[in-house]
Picture 1 (cartoon, helix red, strand yellow):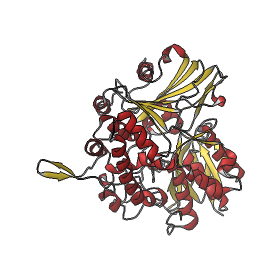
Picture 2 (cartoon, rainbow, N blue to C red; picture 1 turned 90 degrees about the horizontal axis):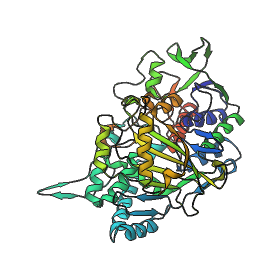
Picture 3 (cartoon, one colour; picture 1 turned 30 degrees about the horizontal axis):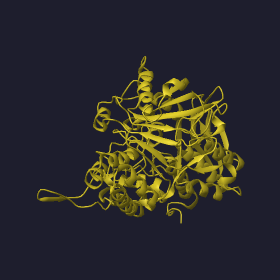
Picture 4 (cartoon, one colour; picture 1 turned 45 degrees about the vertical axis):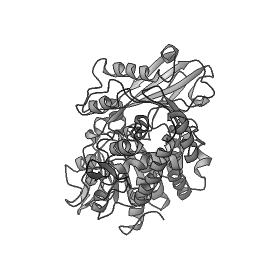
Amino acid sequence: MARIAVIGAGMGAMAAAARLAVAGHRVSVYERTETYGGAVRRFERDGFGFDTGPGLLSLPAVYRDLFIKTGKEPLEACVELVQVDPSARHVFADGTEVCLPNASRAGVVAALDEALGAGSGGRWGDFLVRAREAWDRTRRPLLEEPLWPNWQVLAEREPYPSVPHKRLLRTRRAGTLAEVGAWELRDPRLVALLESHALVYGLDPRETPASAAVLPYMEHAFGTWYVRGGIRELARAVYERCVARKVEFHFGAEVTGVLEKDGRAAGLEFADGSVVETDLVVGTGPVRLADLLNGRALYGAEEVAPRPESAARGRVVVCLALRGAREADAAHRTVVHTGDRQAELDAFGPGEPPADPTVRIDRPDDPALRPDDAHESVVLTATVPSQTRYDWTAAGAADAFADRMVAAAGRALPGLRERILWREVRTPAHTERETGAAGGGVPAPALAAAEGALLRPSNSTRIPGLFTVGGWSHPGGGLPHAGMSGALVAGLIVEGPEFRGSQ
């Protein structure tokens, strides 16, 4: 039995802790803040509740596997999962709307044909078939297995089988998600639909590889799910599973250094001057972990190098307490697309929030999140530059952008502004305080191609006994990926370097 210290109580860290405890190890989690969950937080006031991180879950099988492997009670015995239908309502720049059924290719094709015109659904359906090929080619190496030693294969090969595009005398294949949209989908509304799946992770579709086609495919193939009571309930369930498996949690414990002994990770130092000795350390993001080792390199020159967290984009979340009941037929999620997609993307270059943002609206039909049925809790989310690129703490900055978000949301929800009792605005500055990520950036899932620009460093490091977990290491950001990072770290510790992933 090894003594294992885990830095942070994010979803990936807790997933690793639970699995390691079941394997017989003595696991202690040290969290800088006063609660668990990382970015999976809840804001509560006056009987209203709001998810301030992810609002929906894809690939619930990742967490089903975690609960199966760590106890007798399955996931559904600990939380109530509800499949959201429609998966989303989309309101486009020209006012066109479409509601997309959850996990139904035929239903999606029919809905798009009816809303956007004959042939639109067919083009999207054909795209999903090609996206499935990319998913099948990358699912195991980018989600279920430790990062390959020959990761260059993933970096060099574009797994998305794009349609040849003839222009003048040249034939080209799409190399970016924007080119997939322009050449294969053509309709600007379908392009907006496609690119919104990248934008949610702060990815510019003009730079994002075509392999990002797997992002809408995951939603289509595995559905989108809501956890009754809010996604924060999933974090609670994982935390309680850890406690049931005798994982010890220490909150308010700020780690300031990783101890080394005989070339191995051997413990932690804390801000209060205390020290704990361990046999193994499971760390946070690779950049922050290197800082805890006085800048020591965690990876060799031939490995995927960590990229600054500050380069990632963040999100602004506006929690709206509304008077008036939620309509019975309201969609859980609505995406209001920007009126000027080019301007929105161009604003990210100089680090400016967009003048007309794409806004995601979450309206859960959940009595647990409202004081009574005469009120409604709504969450607006938009992708923005991180705190390192734009000062969200400047006077009026957050409220001015929140006003723009409310105006955009009003295109989908007439009379929204008049219903607002109060609002709470949360920016990347809040995310930075809650997660420790520089600038409050949000990590994207690992993606193939693009010379490895969106691959994440390996979970094992060149320092024996030191591992990384969470969205800034393999396999990247997102709730399913966080859960898988925990599974991969646990596998590498329990089975050793020969571990090759779940079967």
